[in-house]
Length: 297
Image (cartoon, rainbow, N blue to C red):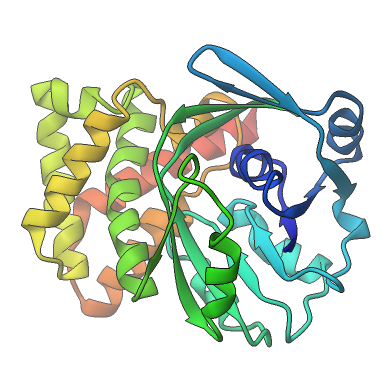
């Protein structure tokens, strides 16, 4: 398949590396500097202390034209999505796959005229070292679901891929995104505020108390069955014990976070349902305060 990947962050680079042996991939970046570096140096993936380097086709986002692509994968952060959708032109017939954290981006999907829209939940651990290097820090799976349109196009996308970078089709996009939302809503803000790796949220009994309290509040907002959801959360914490969450890395790098797409979304839900959410509100404002401090500096 001819596939465009929009976004040169950790997810965009990770997907470009793993997909290009099986599909005709073009990666579109926001800056010309990253585009030129990738063209000159290639893309390097680091995993288990081993580096793998490959050449990929890379272009600048202003050169994006959705003509021949059989699938466009959008990997930019949720807070970048609105401006991106105003910048590029998407056709009605070309399928689009959105890979963002949280659920705040769903409101932008509702505005699109595209006939085939898919959403995904990426469970791999990855971070971008620089313009041309991505670290694959934790093996996982990418779950995909149909938002609207013909999901057979997703099957055509997945079929050639091996088990090294697995995908799974889910029946219900909302349930899939909610499962990931709970994980993001607990792990991301707590690790970003406490400045700890994911595993500390279960290994340190005081931090585990914070995790349990926030989890209980979030599942109440979402009206979820708690037991299986909690088991999944603890499993992710342990599996990614030595990982630093994406929100913590954003704070450390003085970048904006995805807090509005995660806790902000939950606060909107709580307000709509007239549910008190003091912990969610407190952690939301903690992260927003850190962002404001970054802007002030």
